[in-house]
Image (cartoon, rainbow, N blue to C red):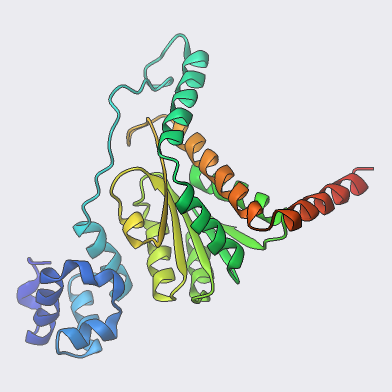
Length: 275
């Protein structure tokens, strides 16, 4: 950005200077608010973004926040990746790793945050669950569980569809973002849009500092033994599944009698159509 600063007009430079000096404000600001704060026009903000090489303000905003976020994901050097290490006891080691991660997940269990998240989900007009890759599989599991107690939710894993669904959110809606790193660009983009729409954001992320956690109203932390380079999402996925099971249980207990009735109806439906 500093490299191309000389190409900017005075008004555009004023915008860039303001953002560099006030990095933290951008995630809560739109074009109009930034223009007002920098004493310039919305058109100058957009022109600045394009002169810096971005398609528009949205692309600039995401890149700027990611570039300035202090993302610290703790690495566990003791983890034995059963594929990459070519461990001869691979089957047993995989199970031992999963047992270990469940014990670690239990240590950071936060009943208060889980209950707050559950209350928000069960009160919401609409619930959108977002994730990519293996985290999306966890999204689908949570969707399936909530639908069985008659809570209509959408699990979305395709980037464009995530943005489409987030476009129509409002303050009565909840977005559940699932990402091990907390910095998956597509999920962060949708979280930023959801924040603009005033929806409540619940994130399920690995313990540590991350942009997604900073954007969220409620954070449910998971644990993971894998580093960034890994053969597959193993312990991270197990921890995520564990947390969503706890979340689903809390959701069911918001009105346990009704939840049991809904589960009975689901069971009867399956029983009827299995014949």
